[in-house]
Image (cartoon, rainbow, N blue to C red):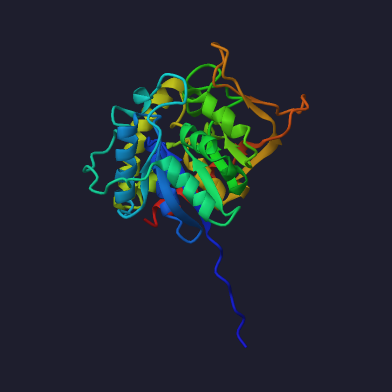
Length: 320
């Protein structure tokens, strides 16, 4: 009698994002992994560029990936309390400068992203949905405020954000995603959700070197070619800033962790978010050495196998 094999259980994910070229790479990576990931929906939030652009960009990426029916939802127009901050100086006016693509024909769903997040977490079995956050945490914090019962239902929140040993990238102390809406981040970190944090300490190791980008170009596919054009635009800012061979590719670290967590090493720590100090607002204060008795609330990654990461990214983009 032949042995029966059971199909691996797909991880159900919601992607909350503010595309951004590196966000686009993360979304492409997720869509290129249909055996492991089931994308329940994609939520746009104001961040790298205003919401009108992040929604547009999200739909452009979905269509590029051959997913014109993917459910896209529009969320927060601005941070909870602070004035809006954007990053056109990094990502260009549209947020996806670097490649010329047609305007999307697919539309965003009418439901607000916050309501979609709440509805999905309340209807899917408890502990089965992972939140993948690639931008400011405004949508997630708003959902938690509106329906606190969702917090224990989240399997895990895997986020790109913060920094400790690397400092910040928008101020000396703060990473952009946290700085844009530190009050939202503070709420999320206090919610009791299992959090995995991909800080600048990890993403600054993921450099788009010439040899790595050449392997993506060698795929010879439309998505691969577009990604190469996006990376060429995106990396110019960081190459000038850091003097590195290539720029750091931040957001795909979230998806890579879901697919191959063994690529990363880190530590369970307490993380607090500074919201008051003019000098350090948005700082992620990581108790890496355990010098306080504050409760541990996040697994903070510090090291990554960069070659393994780029091999995975290239493989998954190649499947689109």
